Length: 370
Image (cartoon, rainbow, N blue to C red):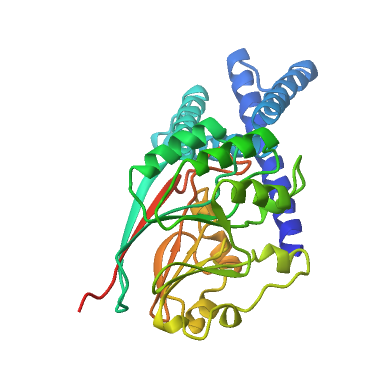
């Protein structure tokens, strides 16, 4: 809880700083246009009201967090532009104008955020090729996480993405949490589950809960699980499945059930059967925060989401630095075991990905043949 309070305070402070910087810039622009050093109280109040009104419109249309992101980018670029033009003016002994830095700051913020919008709303394909010394049939898995249904696409958009993933001809599909969002409607949930029911990978579709999947909404976690099961999806919560000889899928209860709600999840060493080290064990764990435990239990591969790939630059590695996750994005190895963290195919409240991109992941595993 303490970390979330700290994050909230930080967001409030940077929002106030961004609003101050932009109000200051607008007032300086207005003063330059009027050719005055000081503005009347009416002009000051009007300029500040205009800035706050724009912020309010963005907050109402895109959510407050996105208004904060937009204003912070503009404020930072405007500050840097003013700083650079001020230094140039000092060196050239010529007072710089106010308009050009403002225009350049706006163009820079618009360009970065436009790219961030594109990267959040367009789903790329990422592939990893792994090998194992265990004698198993070659596996081809499609892994996706952080669908947050209804945020950047609805059930129809999700079905279109599933059709693209189906062309990968996966042996199985892994959905690693945060399938729905707080704002997901029951209708979207049901239609998306039906879309999954039309995908028939030979070894099945497997799902584990994420922290948002249990948030309050028009339907509960039990109804979500029931809707998925009715459409052929195997829901795992501290449970094991064996989709093929020599292959295990272990679905873990999400860490939020322990960290935020005082619940319990089974230690992986107890969850995996005694002969799991002789088989290829894949662990589905929404949050990438138990790498040492996973490696010690002898699992071969762990797949996670949750981090959104770091989401925003320059805060990509904040979770790692704070010690709440063991990795932010990509493929890594711990204790000789493979770990893959995806940036997810969608977003939560934030509509921009300036530090990463949305993706689904194809994982190919080649077993020993001799």
